[in-house]
Length: 229
Ligand SMILES: [Ca+2]
Ligand SMILES: [Ca+2]
Image (cartoon, rainbow, N blue to C red; front, top):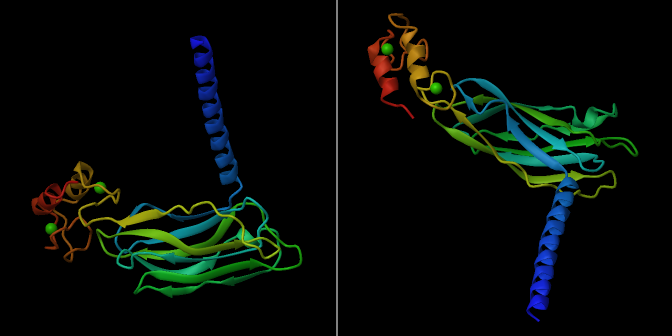
């Protein structure tokens, strides 16, 4: 009797484990069947004033014929300069229609970016860049997430395809003490300023002139050292 109970218990445990594994597999298959939309800045940390790009790419799980999205960002960290069509819908050689969207650098939005491949039966299935967004990093110490909103990707029948969850990526503008723009303030930044010791110029002519007095001195090194992260 006891042996039977143990055997039944073992069978139940096996069944539960197999069901869990099967459920996991089904989830994985579903994820693979979802089209992925991603947004990626060209560098995670940038110097204030530096130009950079943000790409919005799509990896289609099925043939697609058009996409649209909005994007939000922190306007204190990022200003958008221009929005340029990528290769995604052009890759088959068919004509495309592209709307670069409406840039709002006050509220931090880019709205209604649209791309469509034109012609009967035209579609794309290979991953590609839908748009390249040219940006400027603005204020030292600010960070920004790039959030994709109102994303619709459609197949050639004009039906929305299932999408995987969008990745939310982040960029930061280096603080004034982060002289190598790697996101941390440490000895490496002190060494950069030390390499300019004694040099003179108009106040703030190079980032190492932290106190903007027109000369690189121990005072600049102190300010970096007092702001280690
Ligand atoms: Ca650094
Ligand atoms: Ca100085």
